[in-house]
Length: 142
Image (cartoon, rainbow, N blue to C red):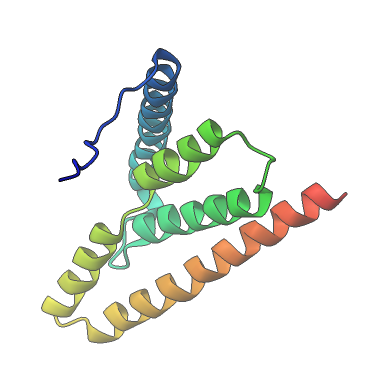
């Protein structure tokens, strides 16, 4: 009878350092993204019936992640890529808030505004990823 290999296997001290560095980079990026999201939400003229702060945060995140994808492969270290993609964009953007705000608009009977918010969010964020990637590719080809 053969024995199955157990996971996790022995990790070297260098691997431990790399794992800790990656965790710290995600935490740092997440803190920066969350702080930016908080600041965007505090801009007074954005407080209307339409959820502008979430849309703007998600659009910025879409542009950033598109830019990062356009820079890969090899332009950013794996640590920086993880810091920005998982940490910063994860802390900045939020699908759960978008979903909650859309539902709230529907529950308040603001069907047209909710539908506009959903459609604009999807179109602009997809466009943002595309534009960010295109900008990064253009910058790295010059």
